[in-house]
Length: 183
Image (cartoon, rainbow, N blue to C red; front, side):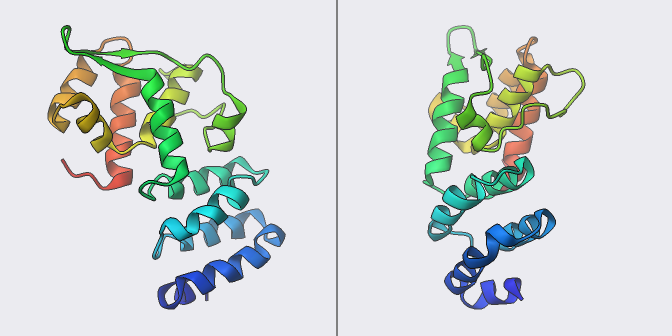
């Protein structure tokens, strides 16, 4: 019913969901959040930011984060870009990325859906996994603009960085898939 309602009147569906969301089961919350993908827009941001990202379940927060990152110019997307920019820089002279890992999982990172003990790949440590999660929530096109490199060049530089190539490559691939950036 929510999917159908979302197709015909996205705002009315959001209003209905907002009125019952707190009372829903964990599984229902995840399904209802996925239904917001239909007509996802900046008008969904307040609900996703204020209600879903504040949920006590990390899976609900992660689902909300996955949707918020897709809303262009959302506060979430801006936070993730600013956060990722702290950890990833490009040294043009050496043609390599300078990577800094997060020191700790800050409360704001956890609230934004970064999962403390997520296992993306057994070869990645905890901090590299946090970095991977952060970078994957940023459109790959951001790096193209920021570093003035093509997607192909970015991937080439990422795979050449021996220490963090796996984390960075996984993050960039996840980002491209998430944002539908074919290049």
